[in-house]
Amino acid sequence: MSKPTSLMGVVPASVTPFDGQGKVDAQALLRLLRWNMAQGAESFFIGGSSAECFLLTYGERVQMFMAAAELKDEVFLTAHVGAIGTDEAVGFAREAAALGFDAIAATPPFYYGFGSREVYAYYADIAQAAGMPVLIYNFPGNTHRPFNLSDPVTQKLFKSDFIMGVKHTNQEVYQLERIRALNPSLTLMNGFDETMVAGLALGAAGNIGSTFNFMYPHYKRIYDLFQAGRTDEARVLQVKANNIMDALCAVGLIPAIKWVLNDMGVPVGGPRRPFIPITDEQGRQLKAVLEENLVNR
Image 1 (cartoon, rainbow, N blue to C red):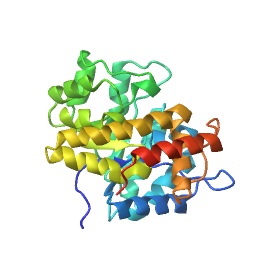
Image 2 (cartoon, rainbow, N blue to C red):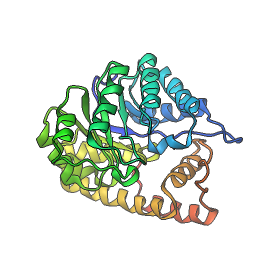
Image 3 (cartoon, one colour):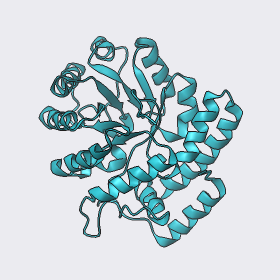
């Protein structure tokens, strides 16, 4: 099977594995990616929020890009290069482009309350450095930097030729539709696993999700059912997925995802502090929810 030529479908936002000393484990990442590939995954989002990107050093983020790039001839690879500073983001973008990634994504610069002109320039600089358009990683819940679509500069950004699309990690799915209306040529990827069916209904080309690390077959089934027009069946599986998401978030999403992967025999280590691993009791409770709801076949 040939690799996809565009970003679409069900895309795991891969975690960053750590070894017993808390160091990045590049070979464990490759094992995880190949495990997902054996389940049918054809595309990966590397170095995003699920990868604990802002808890990694510059070198560690590049190390993850280098590891994933070993599979560049087999799968579609998107590198998250976002940073607070433009120079750092540009550095990541150049690294990813040189390694042969198919696409790059970036959160907007956060913390300092940058204005729309500064955000526009940030994305333009990243795209120029990489020599390819950028996927805007819209995650206002974490960046606290929402996009105001009524702002003329923001409208110009979303209509510019250096933006390829949007990873819409925002519970406000109405905004996803408004982005599509603003520029129908953009590739829109829903970013919250729990709203996959809603995102597809409003025109998303697919979903980039953290829980896909361990439940890719479940979400691929939702996607396939929706594409086949069997929306009622897709919603049933979405409810089951959301039952799992509730359980994961109740104990901490990233620590929980890593616990599940380890429990499934895919070693990824624990989360990086200040994250705290989930307890054995939380793990038992989580496993009971998975047994009741997960459809991984």
